[in-house]
Length: 151
Ligand code: ASC
Image 1: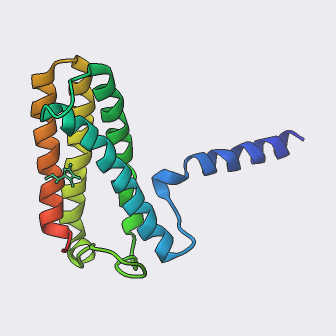
Image 2 (image 1 turned 180 degrees about the vertical axis):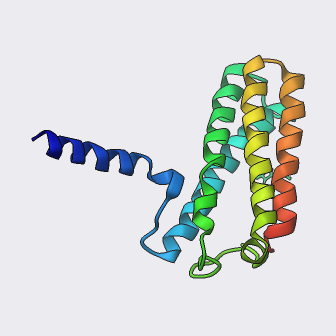
C-alpha cells in the first residue's frame, strides 16, 4: 500500500513539475504552448505599460500582481522551442533559434532576469523604479524579437 501511495505521489509530482520540462504530444502543441505563454505575458506586460505610460492611473498593487504574472510566464516559453519545432504550425520563430542556441539562450535568460527585476521593482510601489525596470524588460523583449522573430 505504501509503495502504491509513494508511486502515485511520485507521478503527481512529475505532472506538477511538467511545465519546467514540458513534453509535447505534437510539434503543433509545443508551438501553441510557447505562443500562448508569450501572449499571456504580453497581456500582463501591457497592463503595466499602460500605467508606466500614463494611459491608466498607477496602482501599485495591480502593477505588482501583473509583474508577478509576467515573471512567472517568462519561465515557460523556452520548453516549447525544442528540436524540430521550427515548423509544424504558423510561427514567426527564426531558424537562428535552432542554429545559434547559445545566443537564443542568452537572450531568453536576459528576458527572464529582467522580468524578475520587474517583479521586484513593482513590489517597491515606486513608479519611477517600475518605469526603469519596465524599460529594461521591454529592451530584452525587443532584443530577442529583433534577432529571433521574423515578420
Ligand atoms: C510589449 C510587447 C512586446 C514588447 C516589445 C518591447 O509590450 O508586447 O513584444 O513590449 O515590443 O520592445
